[in-house]
Length: 117
Image (cartoon, rainbow, N blue to C red):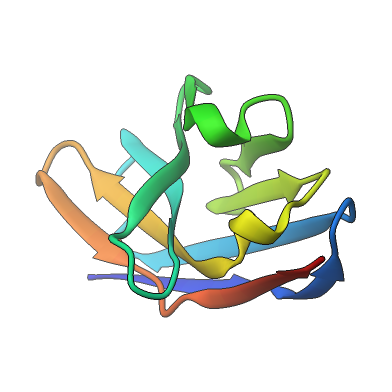
């Protein structure tokens, strides 16, 4: 089992910044990926960004150039730096851990990000 604890959400004005953190604990396998997904009211959950243990990243087109994902492997923690936030970024943001060996996924409880216009 893997536990994920997210923090850093909140209310910010358009153009502002927020930094999300997600700490993973438990049965962490060395080859894994951590990522951020979001779900706005009435919409499906969508990928925001992912990063492998080797540092390879992938971003949704809508956040490229504004969001940066990073990780600290020693702390099993992933970060999402969100700049130039827009009202359409408003959503619950979820952290996900993917274990390549066990082919299993674990999700955090989610953190609310609200961007006011």
